[in-house]
Image (cartoon, rainbow, N blue to C red; front, side, top):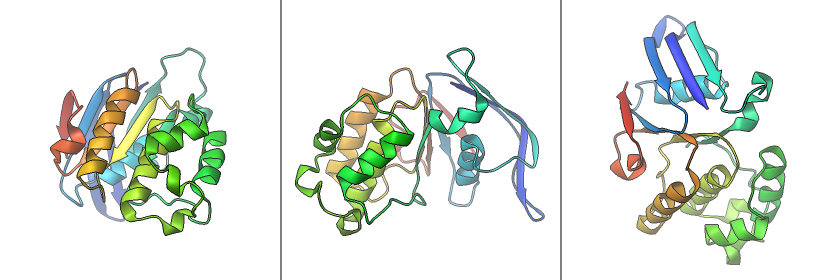
Length: 200
């Protein structure tokens, strides 16, 4: 899945977050978007994901498969973000069943729980999970989906050394032939797989 931004600009009120932005995120390529807090990384993610419209310019999506409908864009994208909310009343098992009805996965639920390393916590409500466990769940929902585009906003947030190692292993294993965009403050552990990089 290829994303083309042409003279893209986004502003809130009278303040431009970014402007005159031209870039093509190539299909199957891992790209990092580097910038400090407040540089516009999260806003760009929202634009690419379709959650926010550009103020000026254009964004185009080119699908690898012919005859795909832009109206189904949501099903092609998985997002991990610090602002992302999990349904905390659900157990992990319930959350997986609910999530993968919306975004199909080639994995079965029990296999995903095992890959997450959370077998002993599968029947606990998400609200009882630590911040690191919740982040691993967020990553798992994205990585183990069949989505063609992964948007990862500071994916190592709240992860300890073991969790960061887990992220590296499973991003490598699940991201072949997927377009991956990592939004980061220049954390090499987050952007290790990226072949290209741009700065905001």
